[in-house]
Amino acid sequence: MPLIQVTLYDSRINDETVPKLIAKLTDAVVECTSEAIRDDTWVLVNGLPPKQWGAAGKPHA
Image (cartoon, rainbow, N blue to C red; front, side):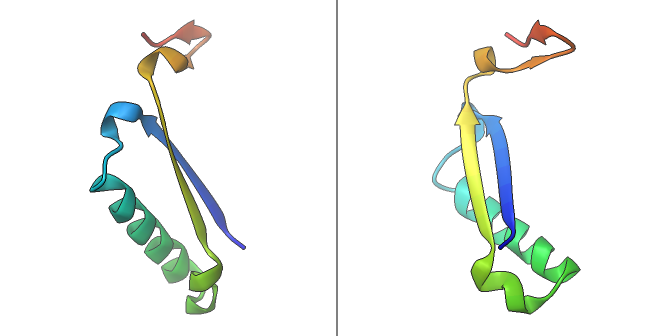
């Protein structure tokens, strides 16, 4: 079972973006592999506030 995990700033997560991400990411995996795995492909979309992000050892916000 393919599992795709996407984490974005929570401000980018809404009722329109989540279904689009799920559909398009599933399509991409199927296109690269096989239509046979479509029903077994899972997509998890997580939203986190900017204060929970960091890069290069430093908090983002």
